Image 1 (cartoon, rainbow, N blue to C red):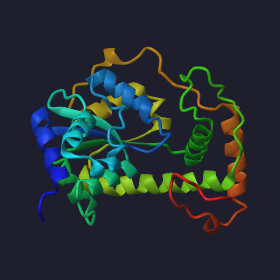
Image 2: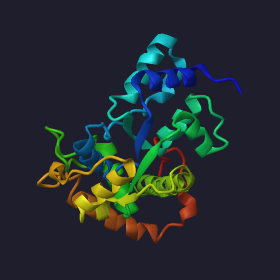
Image 3: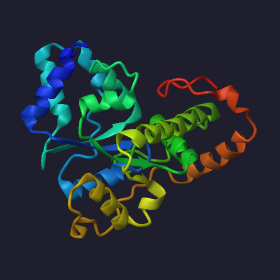
Length: 264
């Protein structure tokens, strides 16, 4: 099979930047990945919060020169021969497809692109809270409490079908990541947000050991940089969704595309 031009440009960029290993936060939306990404950045200086490959679907329409610039920008800064990025499951799929792999073997295709990739898998046990958080963030366009000038309690309407749509997707995405990583990086640690906030040092040290970078306890923040997302509104939506989930047949609300939920 001929090497697609996009993949060759990708490999050229790896050589030019001196990248030997790619380090990824394998994540989904609203899992606390920004928090652990920030903690890993403090340890390594690498941009673990960057969703570097969320725009790769535009690459196939680019001419060679702007494509090379886009690839170089996506790979970001390099330290210790490593690049780092946050990678959502849909972005992983888009990257593999745009780089010309046939996607019949998810692990082999990814290894073709990143031969020495290492992962830290970040997830959230409470998928209801995750789905509600995503629903509120999308409709308020408030993704963190650091966004100045926005009231986190701006009215957002409850919508069972939409929240259930996200809920089903987040269950599916964690399952897909788990299955993929069981072959791509079997030793990759799975860190749940609910566990991380109870033992920050322990889980950051666990992640650093797998990534092959020395852990420095002095680089941990004195206070954990948690951010309020929605407060009472989220709690009320979670309670209502759990009640509704027991009343509706799941088959009525099978997921479609993550962006652009079905009409209730």
